[in-house]
Each structure stands twice: as structure tokens, then as C-alpha cells.
Image 1 (cartoon, rainbow, N blue to C red):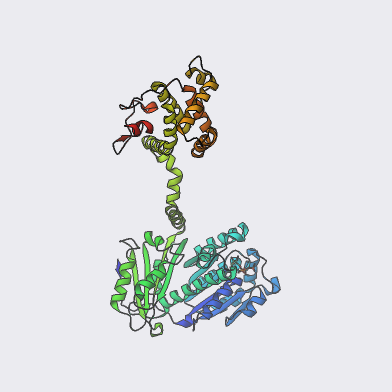
Image 2: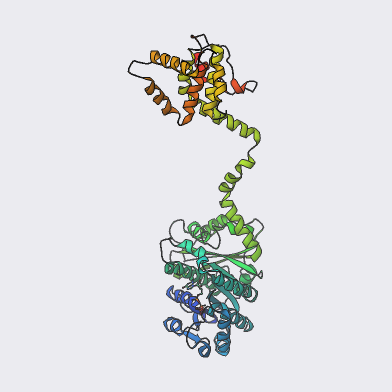
Length: 510
Ligand SMILES: Nc1nc2c(ncn2[C@@H]2O[C@H](COP(=O)(O)OP(=O)(O)OP(=O)(O)O)[C@@H](O)[C@H]2O)c(=O)[nH]1
């Protein structure tokens, strides 16, 4: 359901908005906000490290723990950071008095930010401000200790703040190329945070045609222990409304819009120059409806700001309870990796029947590829008694397929007539071979040729087997139907009317 509100809303003037940077990262974030030209908003820098404070562009600065840290940082210890903030509690209170809206920017994981940000947030709330915290979580490579410290501070903040927008530094890294330096990754995160602050401020500070107020913002971010879904996009040109939405959906915090799938309330704010049309807004909302559930409560606001020129911006804000957010992230990952998972589970999923069919198919492919070898063997087998020749070829086939154990010497010998030794038979085979090939091709060449088609000992065994069965002069082969070897009694494997289970040399003869 889309809710339009035309009555007077609780919007706030710039002078009642304060943007606070806490700790080294927080100071860099608000520097970015200033660089991005957020005129009018007051910037307050809170840090224990005197050097960071000196280089900050904020108009108002408070050094935390001046006596405790002597102008140095808190050495990555949040307890130290909290003590440092307490030392300057009075100055902090004074700086936050009479502010309706406070943004706290902090990089969690270190000492000053993780220790001081919860206290600063509490003070702002006590003084009646609506507090939105923008916090970054450390990169994976920063180690477990920083991650744990960040998690502890995040838990505290999720209870105290009105809204908590968390940025995973690791995911912000997606915004820059892997080859780019860590500074670029931080800068990308800072730009994203700055954009978010501007979007939220635009939303509640600028009076619009259809207004969104702090109360709307609060209801869209109301769940305690929740993480904020945030996306903001700007575009200009012909399809600017759809392009702006696409840009908003590509925000790492929205996971290309997938995280909106389960949202119950979403706040959407569209802002454009004087040329913005109703049609553009309609198009944008229609596209957005594909990404949210039908029954989601959409709080919708539109503002015309002449400063936007030809640009059109869209801001989407929503929240998901902490637990469901994690689950959903996992789901997203699982869906993306689905093909791999299926591949891994394939052997279990495949029905035995299908497996059998596949095995047969593989077998047929192998037999077909070895066809020329079998043909050669069959040529030789033409020299022998028909029934035995079939056995020979079947054995050769089995050997080629690697499915039948090689016959022991005694069995091979049994195949040969009593009067003939294996050596004698081999000589006979050699003679036959010599007759059937040109005079220049000697027996070595023939064997080499065969060896090209199958490697290793397999061919030796196949040839031995063939030789062992040679007996007397050539006889006619049985061509009717044909024996099906180990596939006898099984359903025929027919391709183009041919039974592939019948050895190829027999099929070729038909
Ligand atoms: N977005 C962003 N994150 C940063 C930046 N610098 C550091 N961080 C992150 O913020 C975390 C805290 O770093 P700092 O803010 O420098 O630390 P601090 O809170 O001042 O604490 P101490 O140095 O121990 O006094 C780091 O672990 C990084 O993950 C930055 O410039 N931008």
C-alpha cells in the first residue's frame, strides 16, 4: 500500500541537524560529507588523536580524553575510548543541545570510535534528538579482535540509536577494483556514507510536495536491533527515473534489491528538479513494486529542489530485524551458489536408472571410439573359427573397456588348440598380418599403428587374446542378429535403428 501524506509534516531546519564524526574513521567520513558540499549542516569532530583533529575540516572539534591519552589515540582499546569520551561528557552535551536530528559516523573496531560512539549516541538521545548511526564494520583482514570489538559496540548501538545503518567495509570493497589500494576502499565507503547522510537529510529537512517526516523515517526504521536497508541513486538524462532506481538498487546494502523482498515497510523518497514529471515518478514506483512484497507499507515522498537541475534522485530506506537480515544474506549467497551446490550433490540426486543409462551411453561412446581398433581385430578374427572369433572380439572389447580382468595365461592357452603353443599361434598371426598389409608395412608398424589408438598394456593384452584364439583357416561369421555379449538379455540400446550393444564389426557386416 502506498501512503501519500499532504498535511504539514514534522520537517526540520538545517540548523537543527548535526553530523558527528567519532574517531579517526568518523572524522574521514564527515570530511567527505563536507567535500560533497553538504552546506548548512553542522559538523562536529570527536577524537582522541590530536593530529586527526587538526586535519579535520569540521567547524567544531572536541578532543576526547585530553588528560587520559595526552593527544594520542586509544590504541585500539574501546574501554579506553569510553573513558576518554566520559572525560569530555560536558562538552559533548553542550554541543548536542537543541538538535532535532543527529547523525553519528563511526568506524567500529578501534578504540575511540567503538568506545565513544555508544556514549555520544546515548547523550544525544537523552537530549531529545533523533539519532541515526552510520557505522562501518572492519575488513575481514583486520582480524578477529577488531571484529569482536566492533560487534560488541554494534549491539550496544542497535539498542540505543533510533536507526543504525551498518556498512561492511568488506562489501564496500566491492565498489572498488581489487587492484586498488585500501585508501580507495575506505574512500568508496566514505562516499557511500556521505551519500546516505545527504539522502536522509534531504528526506527530512527539505519540505516536499508529498512530505516525509521524522515520524515516517522512524516507522520505517522502527524495529529495534535491526539493520537498515539503504539505497540511494541519482541519474540524469532520458530514462533518469528508472536509471536512478537501478543505481539505488545496486547499493551493496540492498543486495541488488533482493533484500527488499521481505520488507514490511519501506520509505521511498524521490527528489528532482523543476522538470520532474508525474509520469517519471509513476514509472519509478512501478519498477520498485517488483522488488517489494505486494502488502508492504510504502511511505512515499516527493520533493522538487531546483538545485537538482536535470538530476533525479531516489532514496529507499527500510529495515530488517538483525536475525532475519543474516538469514536472508545467507539465502542470497545460497541462491547465487546454487549451480555449484547442485553439481556437488548430483551423484546423490541422480536416480540409479539414469545412472545406468548414462553408464550405457558412456560405454557406447567408448565402444564407438574404439571402433577402428575392433575392426582391425575383426579382420584378424576372420582368420579364425567363427564361434571362437566372437569370443575373441568380445574379450578384446571387454579389455578395451577395462571392465573384464585380463585373462590368465592358462585360460589363454586353453583357447588355443592342444597342438599349438602360444608362440606358434603368434607366428601364424604375424604371417596373416604380413599377407593383409603391404610388404613395406612390417609387423612392428602394424602394432605401432594399433598402439596409437589405445595406449598402454591394454593393446598388448587384446592382441594376445586375439592370437590365443586363432585356429586354423578362415570361416564365415554369423551375421544374423549377432551376439550381444554381456548385454545379452538386456533391453536393446537403439540409435537410428542400430543395436549399439552388438559389436560394431558385426553391425558393419550387415
Ligand atoms: N570507512 C572508513 N573506515 C575506516 C577508515 N579508517 C579506518 N576505518 C575503519 O574504522 C576502524 C576504526 O579505525 P579508526 O577510526 O582509525 O580507530 P579509532 O576509533 O580512532 O580508534 P583508535 O585509533 O584506537 O583510537 C578500522 O578498523 C577500519 O575498519 C576510513 O578512512 N574510512
